[in-house]
Length: 347
Ligand SMILES: C[S@@+](CC[C@H](N)C(=O)[O-])C[C@H]1O[C@@H](n2cnc3c(N)ncnc32)[C@H](O)[C@@H]1O
Image (cartoon, rainbow, N blue to C red; front, side):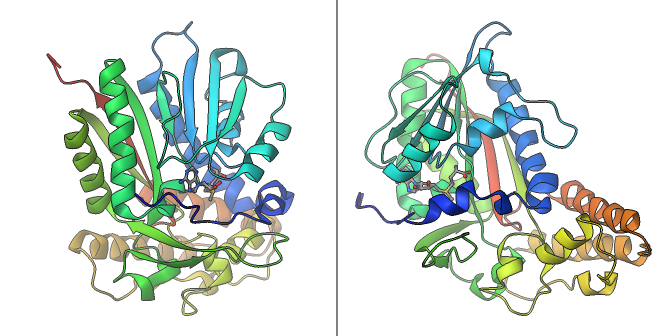
């Protein structure tokens, strides 16, 4: 496994700590979707109401995973409170770790510099969390190696634990022209305050390839996979629908949705219409986009936009459409797999 640092998050601190990063799409849709995934994972992972939940956040960055676990989102209550949590965040980048430590000082949280390809975080954990697609930094084979190591640790030390594996979705409309490839040069040009954009080769997954990676890791580790669920996040509103860095042919959905959510009435619903993209895709992805277009465009057709309240209601209806339609196929900006990793009976 190549363990040289693949990514420079130089200048990324300004992005991760900027209030502008938490735009309406992030707070009203993305954080809510991730919160639900975390809540369901914690329900599977928690051993007892009085036991602290032990979490390791892999590729923790500045500690968003800690905030996702302990803060309310939309009308969802915090997944856990500080008194019942022991959190360890690990990240390759010393600057991110330093920022995380200062942002979360005084919390039941530790942050350590570690390369997930080279070393496993020490400790015994109920939940192996990831968010913000850290595994996509690795080539596919390296991710399988890392997952194998984590699963081996689980089956050697306990009966079961839960993992959330967060990766970039291969079939996002943000990058339709790149659908034939599964690893390509990705450009994080949405970073706030960066003097230069961060470039890295990133790996992309659909439901089948992420499922395969989990199965291969489980076989390598001698683990049994219990319940596995997949969730697409940001089907039309990923950050690159605002930059349009990889697909100029789509409307700037994220920008338009942010405007609507702020109550702007000069967005015409027709600007948000969705035409299913053409391309070589698995049949269920094609079927998903056809059904999604019908539902999304139906919401637009029914919309009236004469007041700020109506604009906000339309944004809410479109966010609801995203959440209710997703099937975990790898058609969003990110694809999250939640999996219960078990020691096989008699193992
Ligand atoms: C897009 S950021 C997400 C950070 C955070 N989880 C969040 O949701 O905001 C991806 C993170 O993965 C980290 N990362 C990349 N390769 C890694 C590796 N090999 N080991 C540990 N962390 C890594 C990066 O340093 C970066 O902080």
